[in-house]
Amino acid sequence: MGDTGTTTIARLKKTQVERLLTDYDADAVAALSAALRIVLAMPDAEWAALLAAAPLDDSRRRLLIDGDEASLDGLAAELNERRDLSR
Image (cartoon, rainbow, N blue to C red):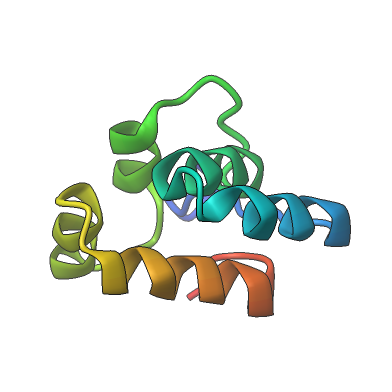
C-alpha cells in the first residue's frame, strides 16, 4: 500500500496483455490472476487475495469471486484497454 492507503498499481506491457488474452479462454481466473499479480505487484498472491487488494467495489469483487462470466470478461477487457486498474 502506498502513503495514501491505496494499492500500488502497475501497468501491463503489451506482451503481458497478449498473454492474458491468449490464456483467457482456457482458464479465465488463472489468466486474470497472472495479470493482477503484475498490476498489483503481488507476485505470489492467489485469486482471492488479489481481488481483496484490487481497487474494486464490493459488488464487483463478489461477482468476480463467484466466477460471474460477464464480470470476468469485463475485468479482462479493462486490463486489455487500460492495462491497469486505476480508479
